[in-house]
Image (tube, rainbow, N blue to C red; front, top):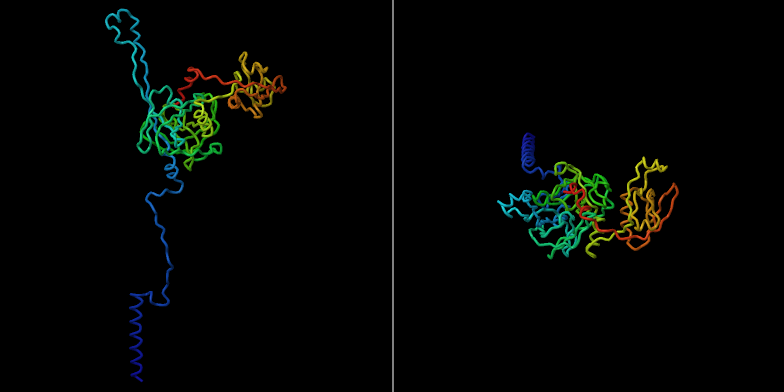
Length: 390
């Protein structure tokens, strides 16, 4: 009996010793050990992957289509005022006669077709003798002006180059206040730069910048040199052409304006097809109907555009329009103010009959006007309010 007990004790001791060794060195061999499932780790496929909410994809799509625009022109230096003094002329002769010097400026542009058409601002290329384009990939080329439209501050230039990355037009008419946008251009000549902001307002007008105004307002930083550059949405699509800022210092104060892509596209197509833009015209001077004026005309609202003057012998005069008339409808579209009326009249084809409803003596009157062709702006008109442009 004692011998059997000794054998049992030794067996148990050996079993416990083996169990201790196995549980310490190879616990996975024990049936009651916990087992984990298969784990698949996700690894980044490239460094610098965008964080949530980033815009690197949009930037990569849009920036190759934005170019730097360098212009130069000959400027005449006026003669010295002392040349009117005979004694001065006697000693110094004609060395201070009027001379010329070459000035240069910079801006931005957007490639809109693989054929080499580039959309920019009129004031960027106005009166330029030479226009040079620099692409993001380092290529450079001399450009020529196809045409421009001072009244919207848009111009189209063309370069003869191959494999140009054209930007995709977005739906600017679907833009909403609060949408994120990127402004791309060459501010201060430092090189291509991207700034971010939101759409602060839509349909801005009455700013005195252009004749026809319907701006997208943004707080994305727009500075001198950004003119003609792109305002793009979060997908990298073009929704505007950066054109002006409100600033007391010359730098961005968070109020910048862009021409909507829908308008820019219409103007661009006309310029490419005909070299210019043709607009309707009736020969009137208009002003907004203020609440005080509306009250004096016994109107319940200030909607409409007040005719302040009528050009004698013009289309409106021949149709019977008179000063004091209030235009409320143009070709079936309601007129909210003078800016809306100007845009609606300009959209009418010259030579066709436009149906315009006016209010005269508190009664509506329908006038049928033979639409004329809008005259080209004079140099004085083009120079007006240029301080607002950057």
